[in-house]
Image (cartoon, rainbow, N blue to C red; front, top):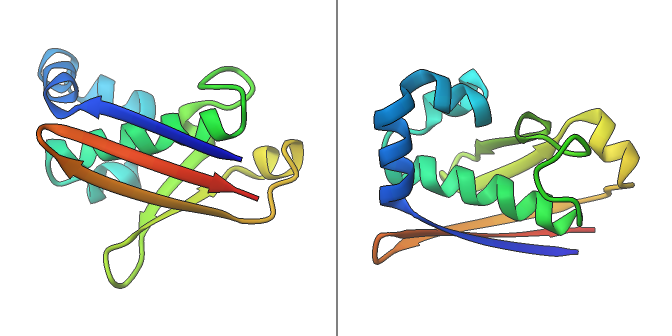
Length: 114
C-alpha cells in the first residue's frame, strides 16, 4: 500500500501562527515537536502522517488518528515511521517506509506499507 501527500509549507506556518502549541499537539507527540525545528519540517511531518493514513486506506479518522502514527529520525537524519500497536494489529502491518522532501514551498511525503 502506498500513500502520498503534499502540503504548502506556508499553510502549516499560518496554522501554527494562528493556533500555536494547540495546533502542534493536535498532530504531533512531544518527541516529534522537539524534532521539528522549522516550519518545513512541520509540514513534512504533516504530509507524512497524511500519506501514512492514505496508505492504510482510511485517511486521518477514528480508525487511524494523527497520534497513531509516530515519526522519528535515524542517525543520518532520515525520517522513520512507526505506528501504535493497535494500528499494527488492525492493518496487519509488517513493515513501513517513509520519504519526505521539500521544494518550491511545498513538503511532499510518500509512505509504503507492507
